[in-house]
Image (cartoon, rainbow, N blue to C red; front, top):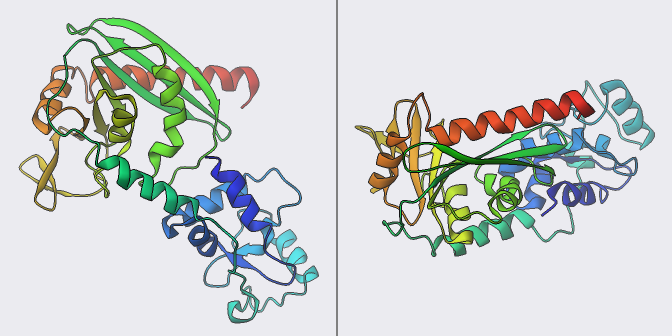
Amino acid sequence: MNLYEKTYELVKQIPRGKVSTYGAIARALGDIIAARAVGVMLNQNPYKEVPCYRVIKSDGSLGGYATGIEKKIKLLKNDGIEIVNGRIDLTKYLFDDFETDYPLKKLRQEQEELREKVVAEDDFEMGSIAGMDVSYTKRFAYGAYVEFDEEGNLIKKKVVKMEILFPYIPTYLAYRELPVLNELIKGEKPGIVMIDGNGLLHPRLFGIACHFGVLHDVATIGIAKKLLCGMEKNGHIFIGKRKVARRIGKIFVSPGNKISVDSAHEIAKKFMRYSIPEPIRQAHMLANEARRKDEMKNGD
């Protein structure tokens, strides 16, 4: 899904003489949590016909994502909008009557349906262990795949580059990164895949490691550097009464699919040489290396 294009189409609906807010557009996309991402997308808008200057903050202040503030004031005044003490009266000028199919709501529903297919117990053969990570510029994603044998020897690595079609939105990471990960896994048959992100340790119990694991019917482990949700007790992470992850040092290991919490923990611990498991560490370095090389070459 190209959420950038869907966002720009919403902004084009704001009529002359009206303004909308980042939050109103996020709600039209289907989730208020996307409000910050809306600002990021408008800041990157490449189209002259998309009136980003008509999007302001929810308190009526102008903000400054899309254009310089002076230019924004001029454009708004040309639209016939009054600005008093740097603010616009939203009771008079707000537009939020968008025609929309609420794309984020649809994605959330898809996550909830796919969640029922997660296998939360051991159902895998050890085999090789792959790690995947993604690095970003404003325009492109650089995905890296590395694969190790059971003894920890690196046996394969590759990278891909793709245009970014989805911004970072908390709890929707899968829709930003899955196109890259799906491309990386083509032709590969690892026994287990480690992904930089969460598995069951997710507000909907369906993080990117779960999503990828269900789509490809493979055992997956999520490796996260921050605790997104849940409560920790003696190194175990719970959502409600359900144990969904374990902590190793500063990282949180949660099963994605076809693996239990404890097995995911033991496998991650086996591949620890530094602060994160080696498949993720090596994939992270490879993705960043690909990004840096491309930036130096093309200025992306």
